[in-house]
Image (cartoon, rainbow, N blue to C red):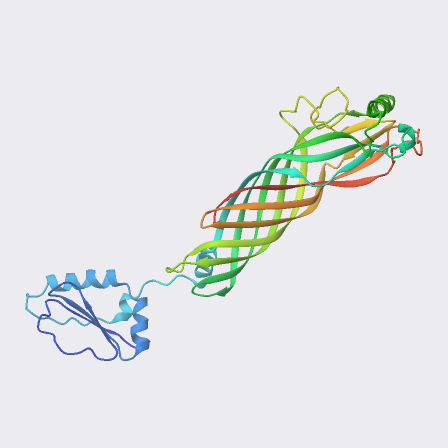
Length: 355
C-alpha cells in the first residue's frame, strides 16, 4: 500500500481551487474543510482502513503543542493509523455470526392420517353395506421449537437474496390420541338396528381406549432454501422459505392427562389416561402399541416480514404404531389384524419469531 498523505485543513476559508481527480474534500462546517488526497483511486479506497478517531486525536495533540496560525498543514504517515485488523479466522467467525439467527416457532396442529385398529366384516353387522371401524388419529394441541439457523447466501443482489438455510434445533409438543368408532354407509332404513349391532360388537370385543395425552421432545436438523426481498438500505424484509427437517422424536408420559378419550359416534365410556408402556387401545385379545422413539422427515414452509412470520409444518410419519396379540388367541376374520403397522402424523401451523 502506498504511503497516504492525510491533509487536514482547519479554517481553510481561502481554498477555492477545484479538487484534483484523486482528492476528496469534505465540508466540515461553514469555515472548515477536510481534504483526503491519494495518488490513485485505490489510495482513496484504502482510506477505509484508517482509524479516523485516532488520527483526529493525534491531530488535536499536535495542534495543542504548536502556535495557532490561520492555516496549518499536518502530515502524518497513514500506516501508523490503520484500524487493527482481526485475524482471518476471527473475521470468518464474525461474518458467519452476522448471518446466523435464533428462531422460535409456536403453534398447534391437526391430524392428517389414521390408524385402523378394528374393522369387522359387514356380515357381522347383518347389513350388506354398513361398515364399522375403530380408528386412532393424532391431534397436536401445542407445538414449539427453538432453532439456530445460518443463511449461506449464494445469490446476493441489491433488491433480493437467495440463501441455503441450515441449522439445528429442539422442540416440545403436547400430543393427544383421538379414538374414533365410526359407523359408515348405513342406510336410512332401520338405522337404530345397525347402531345397536355396532354397540354389541364393541362390547363383545371389549374395545377399550387406554391412552390419550402424551408429551414429545424433538431434536432436528433443518435444510431449506430461502428467498428474501431487500429494502433501499439493503436489509432483508419479506422472505419465503421452503424446506425439510430430519427429526428424532422421543415420547414421554403426559404430566396432565386428559380426563376423557375424544370420540365420534359410539365409544367406550372408560375414558382416557396418560401415555404408558402398555397398549394405546385393546380389544378382542389385541392391542396397539407405539414406539418410544423414532426418526421422521417433516416439511416446513415459512413466510413473513423481518422478525415475525407464520409457518406450516407437515409430518406424516411422526409416530409408528403396530398391532399385536395379547395372548395366543389369533382369530382370523374378526376385524383385528395381528402384525399390522402404520404411522400417525399431523400438520401444525403458528407464528415464527426471529430472522
